[in-house]
Image 1 (tube, helix red, strand yellow):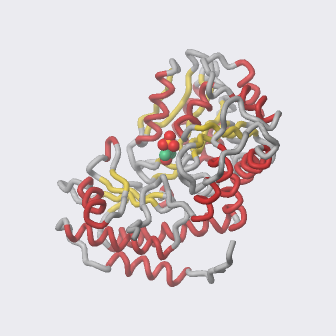
Image 2: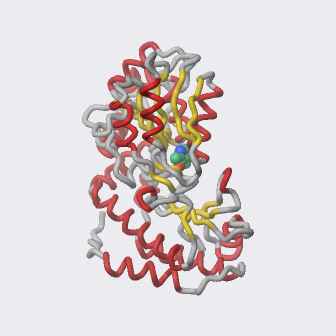
Length: 396
Ligand SMILES: *Cc1c(COP(=O)(O)O)cnc(C)c1O
């Protein structure tokens, strides 16, 4: 008997059975001709999911964090300056990585719960007439606070300042779940991992490079070895890898990308919006506030929910785990103890989301918070009833 419940953390996400099976492969010689039929469809699938016609996709045995390192070490030189907003734990950690690589980071301190201040970026970039800033770092979806920033606005700010810096976007908790336009937004490097929108186990770091970023990679001076995209590109050209690839995960990526494209990206995004709208209706019915301060910042992949003053939100996460065997996300960094998070991305359906909302209610009631059982569930049910679309229960 398995008592496995779905998880409601914003990654790793729940895995569709077919993707688990896709990752479960017998040993395969990665130097045989079989490998190319996994590698190239996986790379092409990622390219289509990020909506690019001709970007270069690199997949490392790593995670999203390795994708950050791939972005900076392949394009920048020691002592270079980059511009970034710090509005949550993930933007903070990318900034920290840049500093540890000897880069100078022009940090725009931003309240946690706010998005990237594109207007401030425009001012800073306009003032940077000597083009000291080589790259702009943007965390598309701050997973710590449930805030989605406006990447097109960041690009418009760069263009308005006529600034040549490269645009790096952390799409780890947005790509494959929320609209993302690599070409349309003129992104230079996009980063993600396997365990969020692609619904796979952790283990792959994914970086997508534009032509400009590929040019920067020819001369970039930061030390790079494992994440050197020149070695990776040479490997791919020979249907191979510069070292041993994670073949099963790559096969999962091939299938995960195909699954998203089969559903239709616009349908995937609409499903995430719908599920998230139900979760937000529940939060409202509970009388609680989101960490994200304005509706246009609300993330469709994760909701960070503020608990009442003086209540330790971490208790919700531990009680849910020990009492009900259900995982919610804890608050991180500045908002530790102040928020708990419901992840609602990947293979979730409205029915699964309702079980998470119901569990959160039991947990909060157990802990003495003023929650009426069923209030959030009912609010979400109304959203789901009024927006339900006939489900095609097709066998894949
Ligand atoms: C999960 C996450 C990361 C870190 O990815 P790992 O795969 O854990 O290394 C980075 N950025 C964002 C926005 C994330 O959600």
